[in-house]
Length: 192
Image (cartoon, rainbow, N blue to C red; front, side):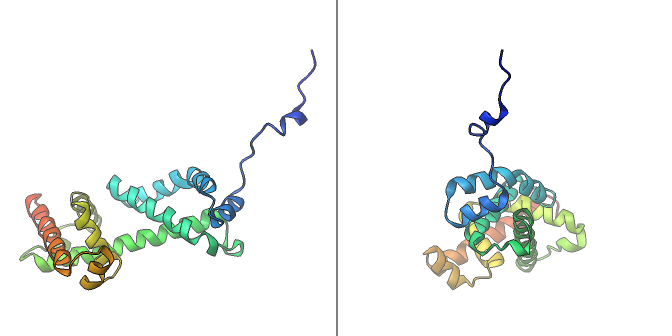
């Protein structure tokens, strides 16, 4: 019996491209390369996000934002700034910072619209963040989207209305309803 010839296997083995090659292909708009890039790093990014964001749904949204930013920004990647994994984890850190900035804005808005809600005085910072994440995950998507655009995106009510193609009054109503829901959540859960 003849011994197997490993040299003949070379053509049958599907070698995975390295991360730089994948990212170059992503930059060229290759969706298969993007799926491979996600398959390679998705779990790592999710683990990083989940260490800081308890609510699974919000964590999944942040991971989606990270990979959307990677897809859109792949052309701007330069090898001299580091490897693709470091670049992607940098995007992840920025998205997490944006998330915490948004939560601080929302906490301020909830406090400003609630007569006696003083979250910071009653809860440790990490608990406040977890509570706000939990409350946000219970909002209808259209209310969360408005809050995201205003508190994370920094848009005005008018800019948000334009972006969503709804009347400014609708934006104001959604913000008011969302803040009311958050206020009720904190009061009803004993967090305020």
